[in-house]
Image (cartoon, rainbow, N blue to C red):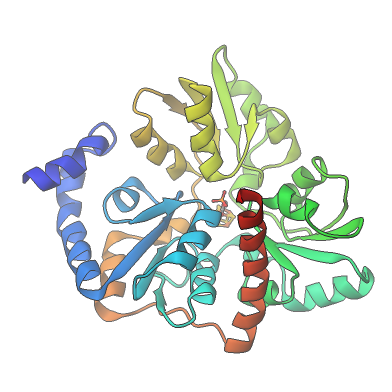
Length: 325
Ligand code: 13P
Ligand code: SF4
């Protein structure tokens, strides 16, 4: 193995067998060469496996970080390794750039759960109430919303809305979590993440042991969140491990998250009931290579829809910038 390959492999050594790394190397090298020749950036969600996160990605993050980096990038081409709504978000924020998703079938049960027409009906039912929409939705749904949010900023965004009643869509579990942390009255939708809704409080309690810190994603049901020590976005989980110094961590979220964090925190012992997101798993190194080589999986959003969705996303990014200032 060359010195360059060995230094990239070193942090992954304990997690990925050398034979697997060797098999992936031709893809990794070919992807890097194409990235350079096309001035491309690869943005990967935290649920992508380590061969993608550590092998080829330029940015790895939660939905909020991916949206922020998509808004700031100087690359000509963005390859989004994640699910379709994330690639759509990158395109909406970069209408003049090409955005590719290596497998356009990578969907999301939350994005599937609600349509733009549903929002128009809710607005008629609750006149004057602002609509806060989780980014896990289609561009059409975002375009009907006042503002977007991610799991990292949902409470802050809801609190920034005028009025007592806020329509919060489409995740009923994230919505219930926000409702427990705000004075606003929330109108919720019945959407759910097919991965996180499968966790149970009983499962979490069975994993409890002295010295164990349980981290859960807010897309989980309420009894799971009640049994956890910390509730937060995929990025906030990493921050919590760093801050708390926990050495034994139970992760209640998608499987690949633990695989990535185990590389970042080699001395921490991770346990998790393993639920994989079938949509995230559609993205592979050969598909990333093919998308870059052939310009396949181009993400398009109709200009009128993109303009409405951009306004809602920009409102969200502006709230974040105001808070940071
Ligand atoms: P994060 O915003 O926490 O990255 O979550 C996105 C997601 O799809 C979780 O299932
Ligand atoms: Fe959607 Fe759930 Fe998969 Fe995240 S983990 S992309 S919310 S189905």
